[in-house]
Length: 97
Image (cartoon, rainbow, N blue to C red; front, side, top):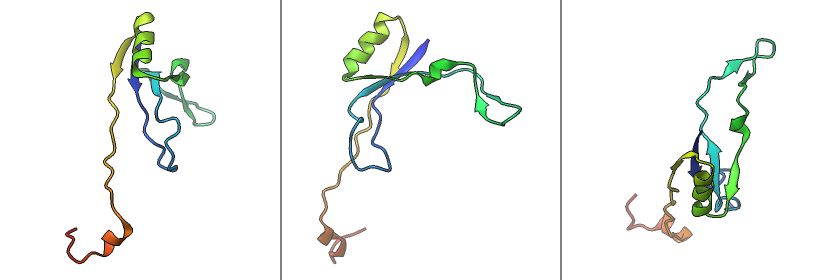
């Protein structure tokens, strides 16, 4: 089974950073999705895509993948650039946009 290990980003609708410090191990879904003829919903028979394991560190997620002989890919987290800026900087006459 192929899995990916990554650190999720912040939720776009929230300003907090809760649950974004954990590392997530989830299977990479390679199967085919089917459309239910009655309701029109999209689904599949593969239930492994519903599994999402959380770890406190990258090393523990990699150790878990190695222990169970899983093929894994580690995606490095993207660190956001934080520009320190005050409200008064919006009205500076010598700033260039």
